[in-house]
Image (cartoon, rainbow, N blue to C red; front, side, top):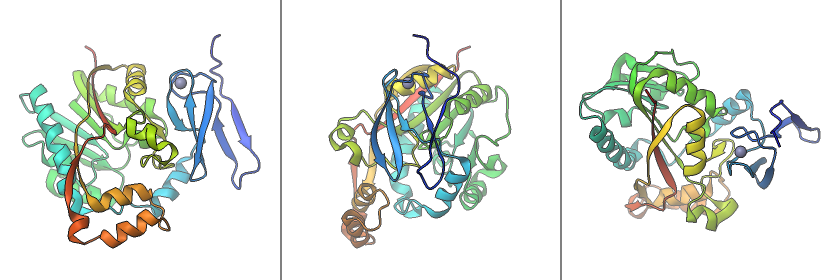
Length: 300
Ligand SMILES: [Zn+2]
């Protein structure tokens, strides 16, 4: 049966705000959708056609802006830079093996520019929606840092050798146009690197609706190697590698992650108890295959 690609909108009139829901998969257009869980008031569904897991509610830009205005990632402050840097160094090494000569890189959602710090010698560009973080990145990387979203980022045709999206791609309301923009800005043979949580890892399967990365509306899409490969293919890319790169984590961050921002939970109280203590600041390496990094090229 040919999937119906016409826009269909279901309206839940009982909700305190009118909620529009996807009736077809945003990746493969199948209408074979199954609701899995309701988390933070959002419906998480799985597509029977391509297995994509996503927030079925059509979240508006205004709703997201209101969400980000009040939420912040407490466990990811400046003191956590060393933990982040562990992954960044490994990714930087991977990129330098592929590109022995420094090129031009765009780090989408570059935060304070920590990843760009490890790309010594490269022409560094980034965008960041939080003005204070963008300003901090600009101090070290100059005018290549743009304050704003990827959507608003000025188009540069065939310009970059590498575009990285680390912990941002699963936040996008509309991932395919984002990929289209990246493809436009990469030179032929250029590389896009996407790092997201892996919804198909054993840990996610064992924890189900309690998987720490299920935090709508922050994360709107929950990928694995298969669905990310499909999205990249739809976006005109060819996947060349995927990796499970290990992370460095503080003991306190484990409890913050498990609390999923719920300040009345037991795990959040443990996080607060550990915060600033020797035990809480203790770092360890973890690789549960819960984070996946996929590399894809723009074909010539
Ligand atoms: Zn699908």
